Amino acid sequence: MSGLEIRWPDAAAERVRAAQGRLTRAGEALRARSLRDRIAAVARVLEDWTKPDSPWRRELIESFSQTSAFDRGTVAEGLESALRAWQPARLRAAAERELACVLEDAKGAAPSRELAPYDWTAVLAGGTIPMPTLLSSLLPLVVGSPVLLRETSKDPVTGGLLARSLAERDSDLARAFEPIEFATDDVAALENLLAAPCVVATGSDETMRAIASRLRPDQRFVAYGHRVSIAVLGPQTASDRDAIAHGLALDVARWDQTGCLSPVVGHLVGLGDAEGEAFARAVADALESLSTTMPRGELPVSARALLSAERADARMRAASGRATLFERSDAVVVLEAEPGARPAPLHRFLRLVPLPSLSALPFALAELDAPLSNVAIAGFASAERAGLERILERFGTSRLSVPGQLQTPPIDWPRDGLPLFTPLARFIQRSD
Image 1 (tube, rainbow, N blue to C red):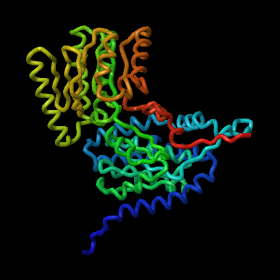
Image 2: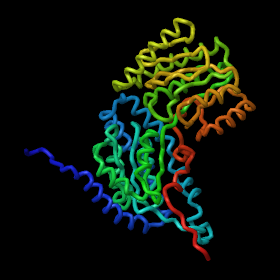
Image 3: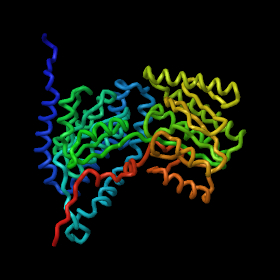
Image 4: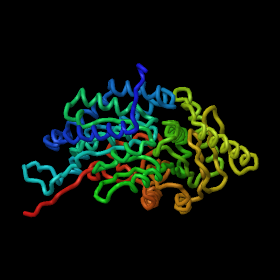
């Protein structure tokens, strides 16, 4: 039996309990430091990850490429472009802005409120992309709450690398963060994890509802559920067609179109038939060009079946004049003949849907299967854009961008419309 690790059924649950005890003690040292000091310390860790020659980013590229289904070129481009946008100065500014009520002002005046961090925070990673895991793990440390990160089988490397980078930079931060893994059906371990006073989770709406049902009313739950991102392109798209097409193709190719910031559809507003067809062809050609440096990764069986079915359906509709199909080596672009919602199989399958005017956009948005996240906009005059933004605001979008930047938001963007730090802490106001 040598070389085999024997775990009793409650081993993972015990590991969660032991980690909770260590983190609770580590939290005392973390909270003994000033808020400004914690902000600066986390910003230094972020700088370690975002500087051009970051060894942590290089190691994550190599490790994640080996454990995920993504091609190495896609991982490298996705991480490099995303982390370039995470400027430590913007993290510091966001923290000082959001937490101004608990910071002394420049004249040393006492803050109006008191920060009351949670003893520890459970972070349940979700999805297949490292950036949300990195961010969700770092933010509670700023407000003084240690983090127990539950890793997923789709990303078993990010948490460990972050722990090592914290240890190299700051011992208090390192003791206040631990990654842990356990089987998805380990109910005891999950119950212990969900005993945290603050729970942060990313995943499907079904997962968010399941977690919420297990929590007490006095626990804080910060949930990031299913969202979708889109592109809305206006009449002037034709004048800058190639650049806009390349940017949209890059948004689709990054992470193989599997993240919440990946565009599931592009709405073409007020483009003529010939202009729409020329743009669709340009997007397909740009995707083909990107496939040389960012090939599509391995597809799960379920994704492969859905993609095959939608490709076959698009071929049949193209044959009857209901769509125009542009197939490339690892990408499909479908220019629909008429508006209407259709399945989005992802994995570099993009639908472009014509709309006669902006007045038709609310009806198209109402057919989406999830709330809006990010929207890429191009090709509109300023007067039209103002009306477009009002429509998108009504449908809950939390960031407006341009093609090519959907997948690279700044670190302080309001994910799901939420601020970075205030959802992760309690605040106390004392009477004079």
